[in-house]
Image (tube, rainbow, N blue to C red):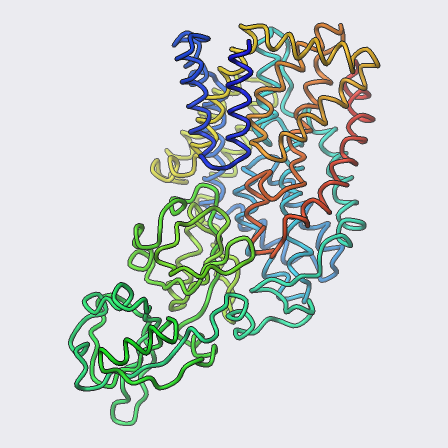
Length: 609
């Protein structure tokens, strides 16, 4: 038992430290349980054959089909049409629609769809995005409380009941409680919460007074770019003449990036600048817009015979009829995370240039091509409008947050949108009326999405958050180890003897607080995998119904409001909203307390002890 608690403690510390990926930590825990002889290979690997793992993977594919066919985008456009311009009204509309979608789809995917929509609304209404993006994140978390498939913790607690030979929670068992929590959350955010939110403007939204649209000069200043842009001209005698940009390799040789190339005027006609591409061949008198320090640009000018025309160029030069600026935020499943832009050949792949990177609200000084990217990084990208429009389809790796001047292009409904919607509704009906086991219904819907062409199998595989899948499969054996060694009974008995001796309601409060605290720093799924069997055991020892205790654990797991690392959706809005850690604590902690009180009042009524 001591060994298991030691492994569990080490696992939680590694989860909270964020030094290793969650799935790697879970696999390490499995290996330690194997190497210490606590579990047999069959017991340690049983998590990978658990139906919950296939259910979670299948739901990612079903959700991706709805995103890919434009169904989710269409709902987002309806929000733009119906929301109006009042701050409180916008918060209510955003939270209602996002919570509804999150009840059936991935919360991270839903936030990824609505992030550019909400930023666009902020720009058009003059409301600071900081007033809208945190309500967006919270709504996606609360929406997970509405249905069985809304969030993995709900499925975990239901599966715990089924494993114990009891009737599991139904599809809409969570709906009455979740609806109450949603109404409370909306009321809080539309009144008290929005007053606690900072009046801090974001880069692509409103200016710092929260009223007028931000201009390119202010945007570049927030990324610390003034003084790092210069315009140089290639002299006829320059050794660069006749070389392609790839051959010149100015980035590696001088730490200078070429942003665009303006050919010399021909017969009185001024040619538009071209976005820098590796195959462009430099000619005499070409004018280059470059990014680099003053010293690096001066060294380039001296050694390659180019003339510095201007330093500290006008930011408007970056935005023309042909080219524009866009911000990208990395998603939790981005393949760019852990790699540099050079390693993933970002510029060659997307034909755009990353001008600067913002991390936790602060610009990075290191050369962009050498920065190892992290989840939540915001990239300021420049390129032609067609290339920028194509970035809108890349939601697996990053989300387009906002553009300057030209509005984002929205994905239209495809001809397979009705099919995707019908598959989703069919799956919900099969689960709701218990026509077949949940895992069968979900896999059937996932396969149907692929067979009907709503998305390809490759897109389906990319849509699955494999980190979550492996995390669940790796943490389930930990519960087995706790049970096998008596650790679970020890914890459950401790809770029963202390809080349970006071009252079952006190036990529920203790389970909520413990689950909520862990969920602020580690995966709510991992927390639920550990807490659900403890809650079940405590209910058995106290002689009360396990349903309210497991429901309270599921609800608490979705209250990841108080830290930016509590959930991927919080981290996703961190950069675009220009939030600080303290913003989450100030706004999220009161909401968490309100949810605790409401849960203790509502759950025992709907699920008697």
